[in-house]
Amino acid sequence: MRKILIDLLLIAAAMTLVCTTADARRHGAQDRSQRISREELILVQAAHIADRLGLDKKTTERFTETYCSFQQEIWNLGPRPGRLSPDAGEEETGEYLRSRFAQSRRILDLREKYYHLYSEFLTQKQIQQIYRIEREMMDRLSGRGKDNAAHGPEQKPAYAPGKRH
Image 1 (tube, rainbow, N blue to C red):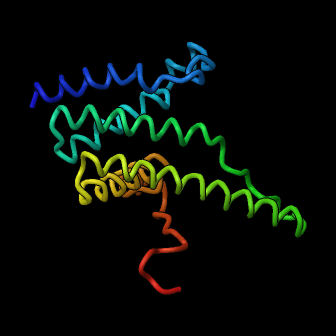
Image 2: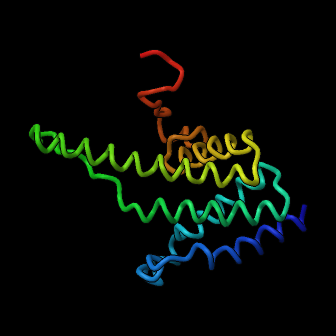
Image 3: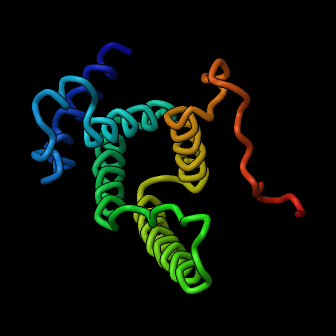
């Protein structure tokens, strides 16, 4: 187990070079000391996912590289459309909705692209597990996870797949 942990740390250190972006240069030294960079977070997430899936060293390396590339492409899409003002008119609301649809399409295209890449070296069940683990991590980071029960009741999504509305 210790060897695996050391291997994962070495892989994470090596992948830092792969996942580094120009955005990292923008952050000041003080900001870096206070919180983890998004590149470092993705490496930690990739290592966590690989560990939960029980991947071997070679597959972990390939997964980490692919996962970091996927995240980089997501970041390159730019920020999500901001919030819509409550007093927005019809035209502004329509533009807002169209920009959200366009962003969703771009994200879906990337997810499908990386699904095919993952399919080259992972099973379909492993890919499904990746999506489930990612959702758990996002919920935990956003404060919606079970581990954050002290922060109030868990937020339930407005839409649950498989349920009729």
